[in-house]
Length: 264
Image 1 (spheres, rainbow, N blue to C red):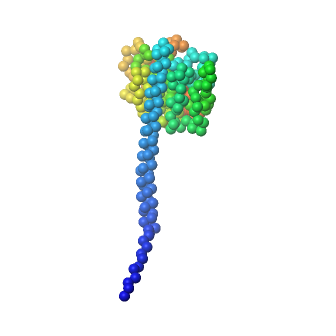
Image 2: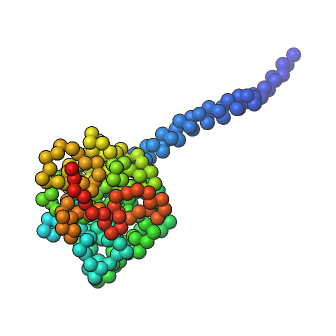
Image 3: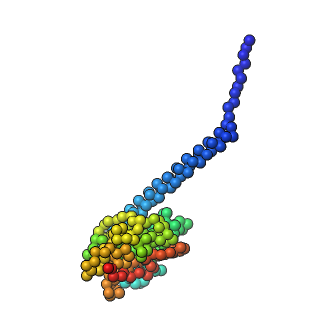
């Protein structure tokens, strides 16, 4: 007799299918946050490198300008026209053809970064080269805050620029911070650049007092007490920053400059 082979079709039961879906969901829950963390760390590495290049550019500028790093305070609009003084800090470097790429000033994962309008120029192309380009300034907030009034002869521990959102209490703002309240980079005149979760205690603070007559060993947590201070208003340091269009929150820098205060 000829035996007929019976064809058996295997399939998933509903329970097996639900089990597979559950496993996929668990794996996705593990993998997706990991991928997000890797991307965030990669972007932070880019941000740190951009800050380093800006610091180098500022030091190059100082070499041709009596050892003074960019200082918007005494730059008239006839020389460099901008909506607020803060924009003149990067504008000075661009006007002198030292750093002309606007992308260095914006972290791509910054909640305030407007990716809908392409960045084109820092300086509007013209013979005079004396006007900030609207694609650089309109409805934007640089991801960094800048210190004006710094000289190459100042202490190597003098802050020059840092991630936007640092508050006077040494923490980063959850609303204006580029990385919310998880920390930020600080670049110092001597070339050191590090990421700080906070600088809110003498233990975590990298700052040294700007009070040259002080005998105190206390480290300030307020960055205003670490930048050059002078009783003459025109000579004192200032911190420049543009608050985000929404959710400004607390930040030390301001559009027209926040003056230094005497340290402990």
